[in-house]
Length: 58
Image (cartoon, rainbow, N blue to C red):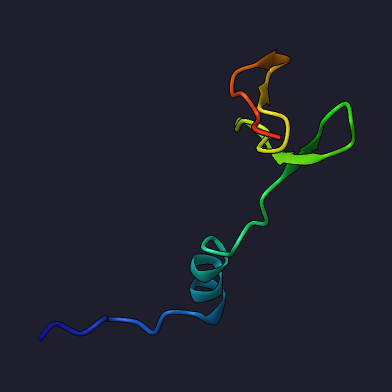
């Protein structure tokens, strides 16, 4: 099996691993103050980009 010619530095390994870190989801606030994920329909009100797209059953 092939072997690397040189030892990979700690910095290079950490750079590679640092690119795969978990990124927390970003939320937006609705006019009524409820939080929802960006580019998704608000599950509480059913509004997306200012329009009612899903009827809420309350």
